[in-house]
Length: 415
Image 1 (cartoon, rainbow, N blue to C red):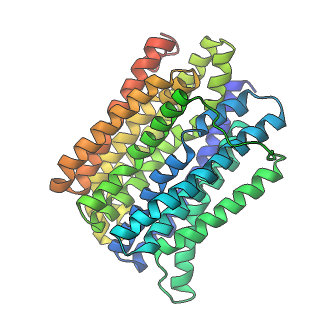
Image 2 (cartoon, rainbow, N blue to C red):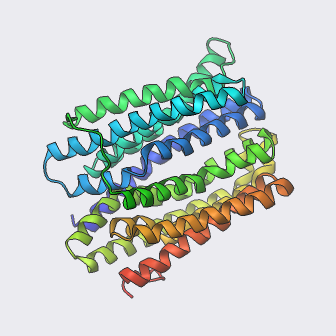
Image 3 (cartoon, rainbow, N blue to C red):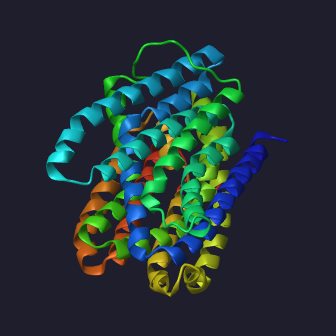
């Protein structure tokens, strides 16, 4: 079996894992929406998105460099040193954030519980992400995807357990804490079971100051593009609109999962191929991944668009009004898949600054459009803002990989 076909099979395996978790999440969320009102569901989505954004700050943009270094390293000792350094840095940043922000938060708000939910979920999510980055670089992509998806699934399971068996309506937001703590513990166990270890090493960055700023800007901005619309929707509209957008976005994510699956498999290979100056092979793998993922994504998008009302009705009649929102978000995901892993390729080939410019442009478009559209159109305005932002970000990245790495604009095999 050649490398390209192996990439396809591994990507499909990762995709099936994602589909499994999304399907489980879909079923669980159907039951959750039957037991919880839209305000509770909207609050859950808002807290989760806010914690996800904070988590990206805690990682300080080190995960991409971690993947690259682990993929290029030969010894297990190097892997242990790189992973430990990033984890220790996470611990220091978490403590600093807690000491600085908690007094400020207490001066402005009375809800101390909300602060700790966001802090705990953000820090544990960052830890899970770091361990999973190392597992990804080592080729354990299926396991990586399982670990990344388990905490959110557990949140819904815990909530439903309380409602159905204990007959107690546990807060969805409260269930985030035990779910993510359990997910972090499980990640440590799996990491060690695969023969990976930690090392006694000092705290330090894997990147220099300039690289750190670039990676942080990229990592933070990527999360902002995917999550900030929900945060702004909660601030500028209401939790009912957040619930509509959250349900529609979760359904649309299934389309882009095939791209994420290919990313998780071939992103570490980009770094190795570029390092070995195998540019023709790099282009061939990139283009084949684009064609294969777009075909799958188009089929999924058409199915979801054609059956949007039946799918949304599973969550309750209230959510059927999100069909237009779903259509816009499906189009957004198709654009991402059509472009391919351009952003990952820019970073793995050393063009971090260009990737930062692409993403910052997308963030600017997102925030601007959200501020203008959400007050008038609610969740639909947020969806349009996400589409505009994703289009600018991804098409700019495709332009740069075409200019500097000769990746074709089209899906052709060569330029």
